[in-house]
Image 1 (cartoon, one colour):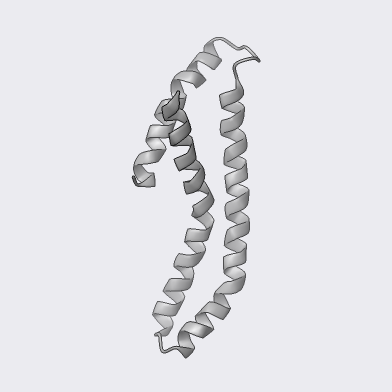
Image 2 (cartoon, helix red, strand yellow):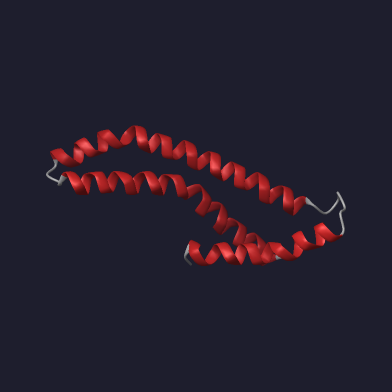
Length: 105
């Protein structure tokens, strides 16, 4: 399933718990909220680091692509796609994990 559809599903699964926590503040039942916030921060940090690594290795990959006969446009496009995928991969992974975890409840 696409992340475009998974994101609203994960939010829909979490909303009742978040509404309950807002109406009945109890420090014993806010584990889901803490988990939601911490995993977003972790996924963002991982994506940031992965994209930086991809940015640093992109010139080498582009040079290899150009030497193998690719056009400069397609080499630059492939490098940009690699950077974007590296940045979003941790978020996608967490999103799929959340959907499986929230479905079990």
